[in-house]
Length: 69
Image 1 (tube, rainbow, N blue to C red):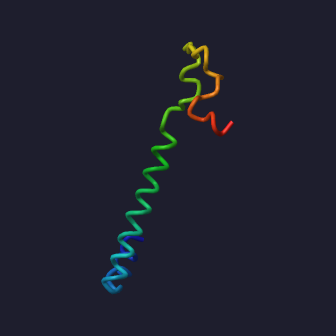
Image 2 (image 1 turned 135 degrees about the vertical axis):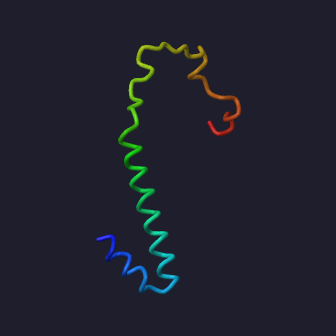
Image 3 (image 1 turned 90 degrees about the horizontal axis):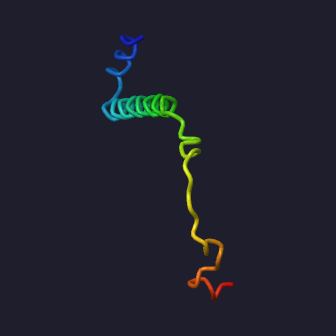
């Protein structure tokens, strides 16, 4: 298959060769992104055992938005 592809590549004009080369690089980058995204460890539940403190005025209106309320 590689030999057939090279023969086709050699018969193409230079602009088409450049496009084919760029497309091949694009396909390789897509493949790398997919393998990276599937290999990543899930982040869900990463803080499930941590406790967070909310400010006592968390639900109070913000002064900067008073004219809109």
